[in-house]
Amino acid sequence: MGWIAAILSMFIVSGALAQSALPPTPAGKVLAELLEAFNSGDAAKAEAFDRAYRPSDPIAGMTALRAQTGGFELVKVETSDATALTAILREKAGDRFARLQLSLSDGSEHKLTGFRLDPVAPRPGLGPKRLSLTEALAALVKRQDEAAVADSFSGAVLVARDGKVVLEKAWGLADRERSLPVTVDSSFRIGSMNKMFTAVAILQLVEAGRLGLDDPVGKHLTDYPDKDIARKVTVRHLLTHTGGTGDIFGPEFDRNRLKLKAVADYIALYGTRAPLFAPGTTQRYSNYGFILLGALIEKVSGMSYDDYVEKNVFEPSGMTSTGSLPESETVPGRAIGYLNEGGRLAPNTATLPWRGTSAGGGYSTVGDLWRFVDALQAGRLISKNMLDQATSTQVQMFGLGFAVVGEGNWKGFGHNGGAPGMSGDLHVFPKLGYVLVSLSNLDPPASTRPLEFIEARLPEMP
Image 1 (cartoon, rainbow, N blue to C red):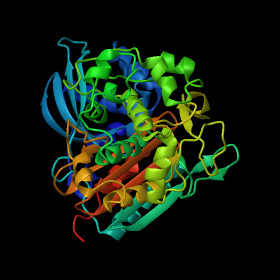
Image 2: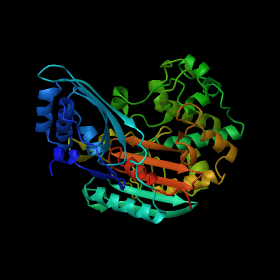
Image 3: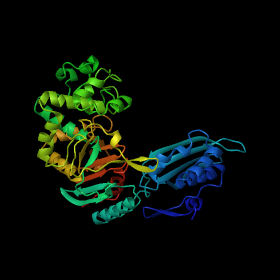
């Protein structure tokens, strides 16, 4: 069946029948052609659509969006007239929904004058239904089996409930050149997930009375180059991404990535920068802010960052396969990351930093990350009162170094990490007892998809 015919027909969404026919209007015709061209993955079709309707911001340039979504299918038309239409779409690769707003010019030759695509929450009756735990796990395995065959997932997934691992499984290849498979013990680069370890280390020092959340950076880093950051940016600002301390990635990083071997090297390169905004007035994700937290850990503890987290975070948690050793050192079981270069998977070696840092770039396993959460919730790393503060919303979607998302029973915490050739997610839902971990050696959102899938189907009751 052709795509145009398919979107005009009845289809099943999460077990419930949903009908939505495109209206017989110019706007309906254009949307049908848009979906067919976008979903086909055929560059010639996309370019033909652009020539006919969309000369600027062409859909032919949306290859990354198509790869992430698998294309879209029509769920319902919300509003419609001759030259305007609003519709709800569902991505084919997962459970995300989006609202498309489309408008056309008047006249005999219609052109797209408006095109907007925004994510929306699943509408009642359109999201997937809750399953039993056994059914949800089986559905996840089936989905991941299919994703592995399609080469859209390579990695490992762990699901635990109430302190017990109920699924731990691996798919794909850790080393494509040698055809080495991923195992549940494979370690993956985890990007910004390292920030959780940095946050815990800082909060340990706060509980020990050696740091204060409202201490300015300069209280401890007395020779810090930029005086505004030294005087005005606090530990709390750094943990909540509200210090205005900026990023580390860009042309300077690319030129110096193999020279940046220690926290001090990053400060030497970036330390003269002034804050991007008045500290505490807004929020902007800051990798450099977590470099500064690493510097504070080293200054206050008298240990290197890596030695501190090894002794005070990894060892008490039983994490034996987590670290930040340089890329020049062989790490048994560490998967090679593969980035997508125009449809071809290539090792991400040339993009990697010298080693992981307090801002990210280390490596871990799904089992070690589960053990980290177990130690965290058991009070072996920080007090339960401090954990409650760290995982409660402080500013927008962040606590103290942890992302905080959801509501009700599904209010949770964790962190993700992503860069070319690496993708990781940790989601913890304390009220329901779930810990979900996904790691992949492919581009984002490879690790996110399985967790979105299982979260939408897991039971809320025992």
